[in-house]
Length: 147
Image (cartoon, rainbow, N blue to C red; front, side):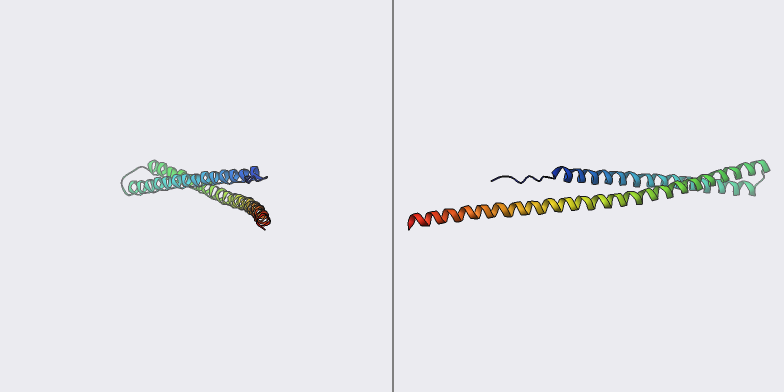
């Protein structure tokens, strides 16, 4: 009995590899979002600490230059938070794009896999038909010899 050999196997393999690569890229994009979220959390904590320090300093005896310096630090961290928020939103958009790419690759792989499965089923049906024809031929020949 001959083995099934799919003529488009290289395409099926390519589509599987493309899907795997899209999964890796999505995973990388999700990692970037987590990294940005972590960085944002650090900046927010830093800002909260600076605001607390500014409040504590302004209640006690201190110079105006010290208060202005702390306020400058708070403003700087606030600006960094705004920029980090933009980075985070950009990273989230990249994740959505990568998810769309992955969905497309999954669909392509599924289409080619189904085509392969159909070709295999057709092959198997042909092989079974040929085997049945051979068995029928053998039975006919045996019947003729016995008659």
